Image (cartoon, rainbow, N blue to C red; front, side, top):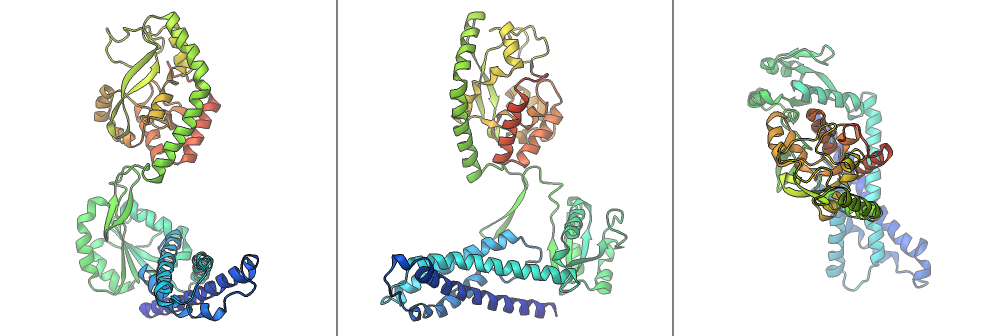
Amino acid sequence: MLKAHSRLFEHLMLAADLVVVAASWLAAYALRFYVIGPPLVTPSPPPLRDYLLQLLPILAVWAVSFHAFDLYRPRRLGSYLAEWIDIAKASTLGVLVLIAIMTFAFRGQEYSRVVIVYFWLLSIAAAGLLRGVFREALRVARRRGYNVRRALLVGGGESMDEVLAMLRRRPDLGVRVLGFVTDKPEGPHDGRWLAPLHQLRRVLDEHAPDMVIIALPHADSGRLADILREIGDDPVAIHLVPDLYGLATLRGGIEEFEGVPLIHLRDSPLYGWNRVAKRAFDLGLGSLVLVAAAPLMAVVALAIKLTSPGPILLRQERMGLDGRRFAMLKFRTMHADAEVATGPVWASADDPRRTRLGAFLRRASIDELPQLVNVLRGEMSLVGPRPERPLFVQEFRTRIPGYMLRHKVKAGMTGWAQINGWRGNTSLEKRIEYDLYYIERWSLAFDLSILVRTLWRGFTNRNAY
């Protein structure tokens, strides 16, 4: 019964797609020669008959292309954006094949390239809008109890709770939860606990669900084979929700590579265009800030030289992206031999090693300005977790879970933890919590927000000493 309904929807969708594709081709012809194009072409446009000849190959190519990109499989739990992307890919492939057909099979006739471009854009927009209307109609029907699938949730833990929350947020998906098969009946189940896992076969026979959603905690992943054995060859759709909550620690995700599904448990947000965009942002804004701050930096350099013997700049080894070490630049704020007696230690309030000018520079964070050079070199970013000295990193990573994950992005001159007060001799655990929050939610807009808040609140901080 379900397969018959699915085939009916598939055939209706295919017919509707072909109608809008044909309409897009004719609309592209009309746009070029009767709406947008008349001033640019001869008074007599090419005959419509020549373009009608292309309809048969167009419809055949688009039908095959849409099937090739799996646009007729049920997408009840799929992403709208992913469907639009698949439509664009299918239409692009169709246009390339169409150009090849025109080149080799219709050599004696010329077809406008502008018409083809219009057709490509119109076919994507029209097919996408058609499916949007279709999905909206299905939403209305499902809210009224039509085209509903009955689901059984099997497993437990946070993953199953997330599935339930998602289905409650999206009643338009038309998935009605019959109940839960889990060994832990407590939880947000609304009294719909049906049985423990070892009685799954009985529940399947009694309720005959349309789909089974398996969401096992990572600790129970070994029971998956038994659950699948219990389901056997029942004609139900089976969806597996992996428990990434117990495994993923940073920007997890799922990708398909050469037909093999890969689950990323830990990844950096800065790859591809994100990496290029952040680097361009750092270079552009960093250059402007360095030029603007140059007069102040020159004055500070002269003041350091006149008030304290020793170098103007301090080059201190820090750990940055992927654990690579680099020399971070700062204006020197302590006596030249500050660590001879103490060794590497954090600065403290009223630290006697500071010079008189250095105390002011540290409170105002002016000593950090030379790090703009590190930003332009690509060793740091304007925004990111603050870099730490390798000696301290080795100590912190042994006692703070997740500490090294902050090195999945470039270190920054300012960061989410710093503008929230977690700098200096404050809680490392809270600092890491804020750093990981930043990495998981990174965007250029977030970076800009942090920079604005850094300027708005000023560079001074009661923990900067």
